[in-house]
Length: 303
Image (cartoon, rainbow, N blue to C red; front, side, top):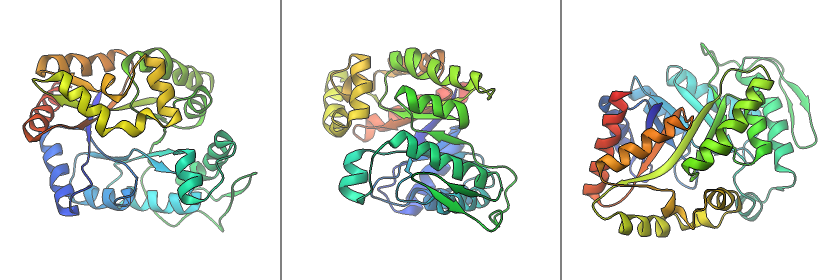
């Protein structure tokens, strides 16, 4: 299993670069950035990838609706070029409240929208010309995009429900999840996407898992803090469905919490469940975050 961390993009860009450099020096395989309402993720990761060698840079994840597939392909290939071929492109649907309520796009038939989006995006990333007309997506280029890369970035879908997991396995390179517990990963995410990839004749998919992590002497308090800090994920329908499948009342029950030995055991168990890429999101006070990063770095060095 590859070990990575979520970047703290609330800080100045120079601090984000310094954080990624520390992660690379500590032995982490990946530095991941979300795309919410702060920095534009691919721009930051292009800078990080240019400045910090030896570590993958990944988006977890970019919503597809605000970006035409030609535009996203240009951005992703530019980042892939600048970062020396170390980009992992995580994309997703986001949520109805965001896409309709904030951006003003229709969220009707989201699985169809993603399928058509990939029909246009993936050939562009492979250096092909595109002429595509779907119900929700139209994309036409005069030729391949003029951005030279040695290989296209792997594409991971934020997939939780069966339809999206089957799509991720059949046409993409894997999935990246968030706030999804170990039992759900082992018994739902991994088998569903793996079966779809096998049936499509695709390679074994990458399965990324993003979870909050806190090494602490106060696990009950840390879980309560996770419930408060990540409360929105207990309300959004797709995440709520995964918490329910796990039998978790809230985010605090899927957060990885405990002393050093307990946290290490829980993280290692994710690899046994079939997770290939772990993206830890350390939280807590300064001392707890320092302990958390140290434990995950030791796991990364152990491989």
